[in-house]
Length: 369
View (tube, rainbow, N blue to C red):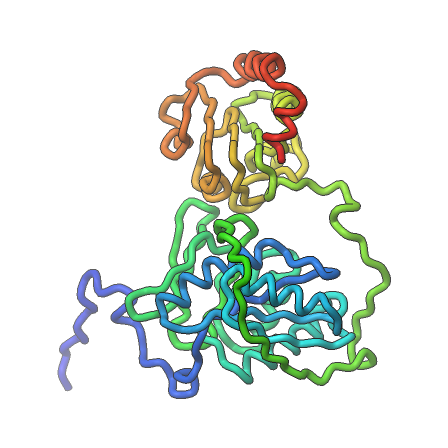
C-alpha cells in the first residue's frame, strides 16, 4: 500500500477547483426570473429594482428576463405585467386565482414552486421584504436548492454562475456565494440595495398564463383583516430623498433630538446606527445598515457615525453622503463625499439654524419630494 498523500489543491485554485459538473436534470434550466411582489394591486418598488438587475444578468447570459405575477383575477395582473415590461421584462408568467388575492405562504409557495418546476428558470430573484423573505425560504426548501439572502450585489461569473454578494460575520466582511450544483439559483435583495432602472415607456412583452389548482378550503391560513403600511406609523426610510442619522458620537440619548431637529428643518426622515438601537435610544425601525434599512437618498447626513461596514452597506447608494465626526480616521470618511471633522453635538445646532434661515417651506418640500 502506498503512503503517498493526495495532492493538495493548488493555491488560489478557489471555487473553480471545487465545482462539479452540473447534473443532467438541471441543464435545461434557462432564463432569469423576478417574482413581482404585488399587494392590493400595488407592485412593490423592489420588484422593479430587481428587474433592472435581472436585465443585466439576462443580457450577460444571453437569455430572457421574465416576471412572475400572481394574484386574484382582474386588471391588476395586466397592469403589473405592463409595468414589468416597462422596467425590462421580456415576458411575464401570470397565475390568477381568487385564493391569491392576499399573500399567504401556503398558496403562494405552491403556485411559485409549480411554475418554476414547469418552466425551469436558471435564476430566481425576490425582494427581501417581509413577504419576499417568507416566500423565498419556503420555495427554496421545496425545490431543494440554495438561497442567498439580503444580497447587496448580483453578478454572473465567467462560467455563467450567479455570484450573489452579501455581508457576513456581523457585517464585518462581504462574501460572494454560489449555488454550484442546483437550480434555480435563488437570491433576495433588500429594497434600495439595487438602483431603480429607467422606465421605458411603450415597451411590450409576452404574457404566459399558468394555471394552478388552488382551493380556499384547502388553505389553513385565513385572512381576517388587512392593515396597509400607509395607515401605520412605520417609517419610510428606505424611500426618503433626504435622511439625517446619528450615532454614538452624539454621546447621549438626549442629544439625538439634534438629529430630529435637523431632519425637521430639511423635511427629511431620520435614522440611526445599530448601537443606538441596542442601547434603547432609538426604535429599531429607524436603524440603518445591514440589519436595518437600506437607503438610497439624494442626501444623507451622518452625525457621529463611525461608518463600519455594517452601516456602509446600507447607505453607500446615496447620491451625496455628508459625514460629521471628530475622528478624521473614521471609516465613514473612506466613502463619504463630504467630511466635516468636528463634534456633531456642537455642529448640528449651528447647521440646523443655518438651514432654517436659508430654506423656505417650498424648498424643503422640493428637497423631500
